[in-house]
Amino acid sequence: MDRLMVSLPSAKVLVMFSVVEAKPPLVINTWPWPKATDAAWKELVAASSPISAVEKGCTQCEIDQCDGSVGFGGSPDENGETTLDAMIMDGTTMNVGAVGCLRNVKNAVGVARRVLENTEQTLLVGELATKFAVEMGFREETLETNSSLQIWKDWKNNNCQPNFRSNVTPDPFKHCGPYTPNPDRNQHLYTSRLTLGINEKNHDTIGMVAINSKGNIVVGTSTNGLTHKVPGRVGDSPIAGAGAYADDDIGAAVATGDGDVMMRFLPAYQVVESLRRGESPTIAAEDSIKRILKKYPTFNGGVVAVTKDGKFGAACAGFTNFQFCARDSNMTSTQIYPVKCL
Image (cartoon, rainbow, N blue to C red):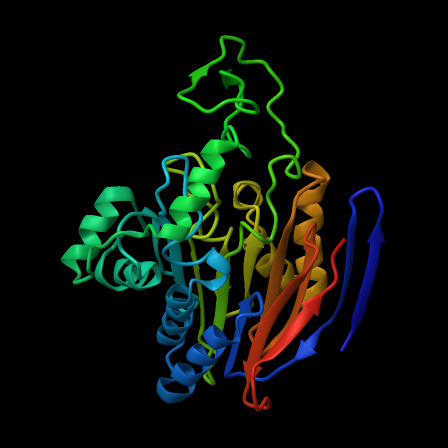
C-alpha cells in the first residue's frame, strides 16, 4: 500500500489515505452507510450481477433516507418539494440510465435502471420522468414528509436563507422571492460555497461501485439533491462523469459534495482517465479535487476511486468528516474508511 499526505495551504486540502488492495467481488460506497453496502454485497454474491447489486444498495439508502440526503422526505426545494436524482452506469457497455428532478416516485435508482434497460435514452427528467416511471410499474406518491416541510417552513421564516439565487431583485441574501433578474448582467456571480452553507450535512449522495468476480463494473448514485435548491435543479449525481463513472478496462469513481461545481469538472471521469495513465487511486482522486480547488477554493466534496482489480483510494476537501464503506470476499463485514480533510 502507498500512503499519501499532501498539504496545500493555498488550496486548503490535506489528504491522507492508504491505497487498499482489495479483491473483486467488491462493493464500495460513499459515506458510512454499511446497510447499503451489505444489501449490495448480498445481492452481488447471490447473483453476481453488479447492476442488481448497485440497485439494491442504493435502494436500501433510499428506504433508510440516509442522513436525510437520499430518498424521500429530505432536501426540500424553494417550494418545499422533494425531488430525486439517480443514475446507473454499466462499465461493460458504457450504457447509462438516469433520472433528474424526479417527482413523486420514491425508488429513483430503480427508475434509472428502467431507463438503462428499457429505453435507448440516457437521462429523463421532471414530470415526464415520473410518467415514464408509472408506465414501468412504479407507484406515484408524495415525497414530502412532516420533517421536510418543517425544514422548508423554517427556511421561509429565516428570510429564505441560505439562498441559491444570484444577480436578482430583491436581494436573495435578505429576502424571499419571487425574483426578477437585475438589469446589470456583468455583476460578479461567484459566491463562497461556505457562505451558501453547502456541507456534508445538507449535500450528501450515495455513490456506489460494484465489481463482480468477472471484472464487470457498475456504478450508481441516488440523492435528493441540495436543500433549498431552485426548483428544477439537477445536480451531478445523474450526470455520467460527474457523480460517477465506470469502465471495465480501467476502473471506476464516485463523487459526493457540491454537485453544481462538480459537474463543471467531471471529477469521476477525470479519475478514471488518471487511472488509465497509471496513477494510483489516491493520487487520481486527489488530482481531481485539486483541479476543482484551483477555481473554487471553498469547494467541499469527496471522491472514491477503484481500479478494475480492486485497489481503491480516496481524497476530499472542505468536509469536516468524510468516510466511505467497502466490502470484499476477504472481509467478514463491511469496513468504514475515514479520509482526513481540511
